[in-house]
Every structure is written in structure tokens, then in C-alpha cells.
Length: 152
Ligand SMILES: [Zn+2]
Image: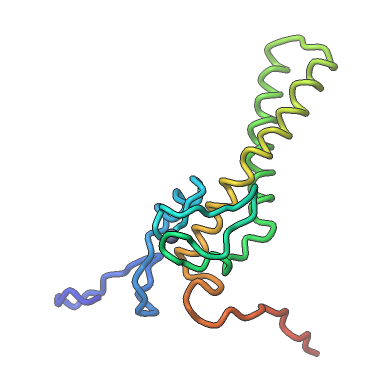
């Protein structure tokens, strides 16, 4: 973008380089968090727990392009780990719970939080990939990404 004064306006995170319209990143992530299509915010993103629909039933956006893979699981581990470990340490420093009480509180809490967070976090990852035109979300052929051939 040139404003006529001889300076270039830099657009970070946009699609200035490709000529494609920038897709709003945070709204797409929030729609994914809520389990909605990142494009229209109306259609459902999941048909089962963490199974994404192939296509949005409202706007027809192809959802099957996403490659969330293991990222949602890694993010959930980081989030739940910070919540549970800090809660455990706070309780440990301020009370005298017996070991059995720690066990029956923190183990189920870890499991429940993980199960609750996996779907919204996966939705957010799909929203992010859609907004950034990653993988097949940019209309180009959805090719398999292979590892480079080893050299030497
Ligand atoms: Zn949609």
C-alpha cells in the first residue's frame, strides 16, 4: 500500500503479499473456539467430539483442508498443566491435605479439563489455519507435504 507520501504502509499478518483479502484472524479463532465455522460463524464445525465436518452446512466452506493434527493436544497439555500444577502448588503451600485427597482431586481434574478443552482448542486451531490460508484453505491444490530428500 502506498499513501502517496513515499512511505509504504506495512500490513503485518495480512495477505498483502499474495493479493488475497486478509481473513480476520481473531474472529476466526473465536468462532472455532465456539465450535462454529471460521468463515461464517453460523455452521457447525464438529459433527462429533473432535471430528470436524467436511464442509460448512451454512456457507459451504471446505473444512476438511485443516491439518490440526497433534497441535490441539499439545496446547491442551500446556494449558491444563499450568492450571493444575499451579492450583496444586497453591493448595500444597496453604493447606495440609493428605496424599489421598490430592490424588482424588488433581487426577480427575486433569482428565476433565483436558476433555473439556480439546474440542474448543481444536476449533481455534482450525480457525487459525483457515484465516492464514494454510494448507488447502487458500484454494490451491491440497498437496501432501513431504519431508525434503536428505542430501549428502
Ligand atoms: Zn460457514
